[in-house]
Length: 71
Image (cartoon, rainbow, N blue to C red; front, top):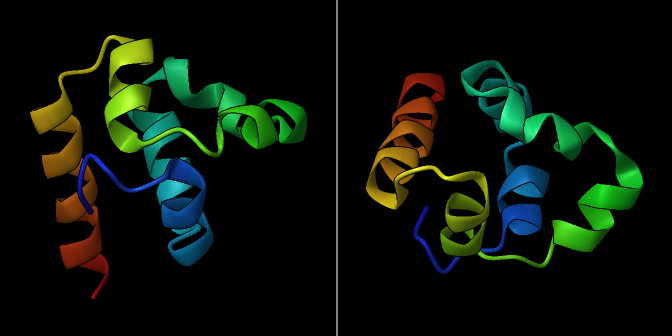
């Protein structure tokens, strides 16, 4: 997963990551709202990090670690 990947693409391919993100921070709870998800789904991970105040490198490391644990 990179900063240029779209959040919708990542969560469609790896749906379990949505719950991991929500558990990481309440800032991601909007991902459960279908209307909000459709709106922000086209945002890149980089944009999501910026909008939630997350450090991009930390967020990417978290997501990729979750992938590694699952595989």
